[in-house]
Image (tube, rainbow, N blue to C red):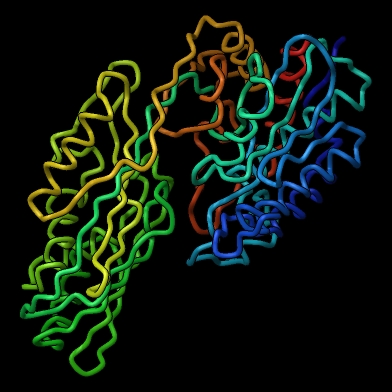
Length: 467
């Protein structure tokens, strides 16, 4: 059957954007403060999942909601199951937006809103790829399930639940990364370093320090409150510091207290070089001051071992594999109070050839110098699908055909997608080469034409893989 996939995708453009508008309007970041038995991850993620499944019900697919944490839209039958693994949750809106992050705005060719790039836009494009098959009466020879998780940005609670209660898919892809295709994902380990409170006095006292929203996001904003021996002098030196570094900031003085604020640049934690970490820059400023013991410990640890070092040279963890590339480190969360102590969350994306035991040991060695203790929070091994596997070869062929990029090759990245939950799982789109990556950032956007082209690629891919 000869199908003009690009033309078909254009026919669905308006319907697709109307549905994307509904998804973007839901703040679906994890909200454990409002979690209930009905909504284990908070109401937002569940409502976004329900909206996805409503699309499936509307269009005549089989759907299933599992505990309001994961669900699927199913089409076809067969002994094998092909999975398309997407997610309806997103990062918090955060500061720095020029528009309402939960109101889809079309500005020229760009669709702007939280989730349009990661992963509501791509996931919906894959859904419409599946819908194109059904609307044309194409009967797949395998069972196809578009599986929608609701906690991809944190602990993968929903997708883990799916794999506990449903059969493991035979093969598939995740539309949650970039084109042309990702057949290798680095390992992923998160480590927290904790510092006890010590009420000793110093020339200055760190009352509190806070930066970051998620472990896999470079912190855009950081703030600290300090009781200073000379607040005016600290304010003057802060202004001088800001003149020399790639961040902006401000301060407020009240008596002997000064509140310092720094604004950097948010970015996806898989490549910290794309962002500017406001938290580590704030520690870098404060490190020159004499603080109480507990404040000094966490500030010195951040500055001496973590600041401006995404390849972890200061920790002795810099490592590169010829196939999977460099180890990277993101300092995603930093929290401290004089009363309760503090915590620093570091997320490492590591290639084969280095182990989590080595990473944890080096982190503990560094923490020992500052009376800190480390704890591993989560871990995923590196994932790799051979480039000669039929799923890699077929998807790469479709991508080359639709883009005329005959020299495109599969890649290995630091990002972690649901694809790694399947032995024969790859990440496939939807960010095109050369497009700006605004995932996890303020003013997240995706070109509408790119999303429609992704829909076309997904439609052909689902068709070819399910024959």
